[in-house]
Length: 262
Image (cartoon, rainbow, N blue to C red; front, side):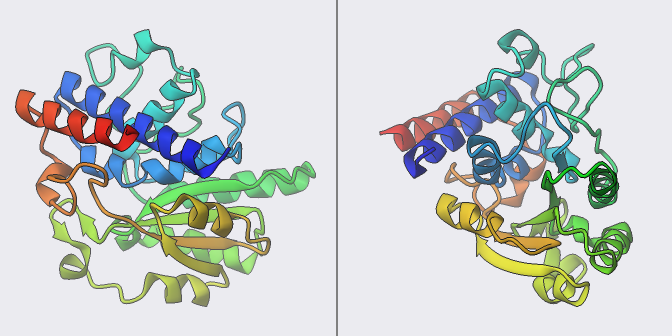
């Protein structure tokens, strides 16, 4: 897939996110938009096989981004996607795996994704399976101690197939992550836990692709992102962590995304 194709895929993912959030009056749109480019590369470059447990979204509140990606790829039908966050739907507001094709872990409580990914890496080693295992965590989520317990285990056991991608958008539910619980440099922390670390622009598709191609692991990619990326009035505006769309903001968001297609 060429870079222009990644851009189109990411834009289509964002359109699905906006439509679903508007129709359901759900939250977490900005958190989903910040990882859309990462998902476009992971799935567009066939780094993740949706039939295998190769990818886990640890920051589960951004689950609509995963559903939108699977919808764009035709893995989730339009009929099912249209029920997102509605009574009786299999598509919960936080990513859910029950009866959802392409999703293998429900994540609502933060901090569990790397631990599960570690388990899959170990199982693959036993079964002589060389699949790489990807997990996206949020920078605010890295306040959770379970993140570091899992990272310590992965580094100590040299789980070379593990790729942790930190969605480093600097914001979390109640404000700037640095103001809520200062953590210093996340990159240095993962290095101390025996990870190879690469820092990139998390919206640069070539940089994402090149970072993932790093061979020695466990690998941590610190992806510097913009919360709400792609929609001007949402970018770095933490009100959109919980706020949903009305008719005017919905139309404006779609207009801006249509402009990206030009």
